[in-house]
Image 1 (cartoon, helix red, strand yellow):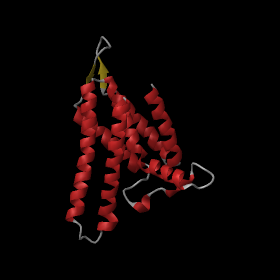
Image 2 (cartoon, helix red, strand yellow; image 1 turned 60 degrees about the horizontal axis):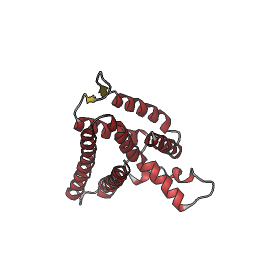
Image 3 (tube, helix red, strand yellow; image 1 turned 135 degrees about the vertical axis):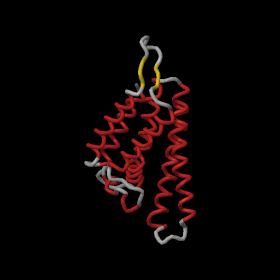
Image 4 (cartoon, helix red, strand yellow; image 1 turned 180 degrees about the vertical axis):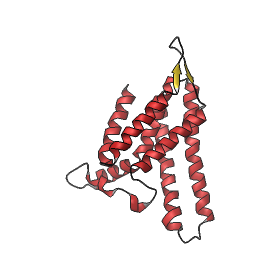
Length: 190
């Protein structure tokens, strides 16, 4: 329950720095989370839960849902699409540290929220399913980063490398870093 309260506080903070475009997206995301929670069913004795789908499919659906939420809130993997107004939301007077933290939370907070939701959803099932699902979730992030590296390597002499491929690589790398740090913190705390 303390993790759920932390998730609620993170969600409110994320909605504040994202702005008015996030309300409808968060409603649809809440519906998606409810649908994912319905994938777990309790047996008749209410002691064990069974998963209707395989862990790698569930992790893929979570990953797809989080990536959809990122793009649905008018974000993109490009530097000109960063929502710089988020840096000015938290305080009346501009501060580089709080402004940078607000911008980072605006841009990469959905990845952290996705991992928190994954960890909250999985304790309903067995610990091996939770471990397997989070490993698959991390594997999908590693695959995204790997293919981004391959793409940048192959297209390094392309005219649009700095406009399209390099920002995608940088965002993918930062998403991987946020994923690894969040995964490490959740493993240590839970």
